[in-house]
Image 1 (tube, helix red, strand yellow):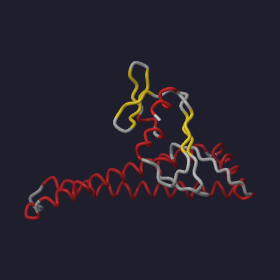
Image 2 (spheres, rainbow, N blue to C red):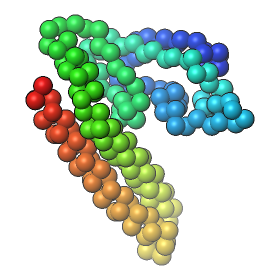
Image 3 (cartoon, one colour):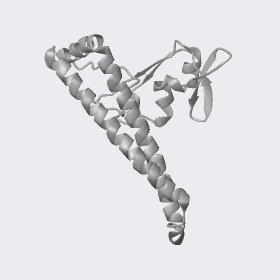
Image 4 (spheres, one colour):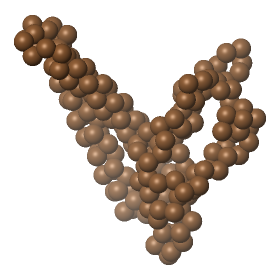
Length: 181
């Protein structure tokens, strides 16, 4: 995989389920690129790999209607080769909507990314809280970092709820635009 990335080769991964190895996520999110002296690098497992602009990744699944996590779905283009009349209409409608409602699509993807970031942040805070609680039950009430993390968790959960609400609103607006066409 590293050689394909470095030399700009097309790479094909077959028989993928609905879960994709987290080690591949930097390939989807090119915002993680590090540019040094005009050369782009991405983190892949434990090393930084030089990325050639010609690198293309294809992932094939036999699942008829796969649902991937938001952090993958935001950065990937999906092509469904299962052709039925309804499926083709849906795909063509998606192309038209992508052209006509680009701003709405951008808002949806942004809201989805924000929600995912807040959820990841919430999980990190929850892990800190659980670690603090598991240390010594007698010191729980005196642990200021625990109390601070509980506050952060509360605020982050509000952010998650707000971001998910924005995602739902964007989905409804996209549904209304879809109904028009």
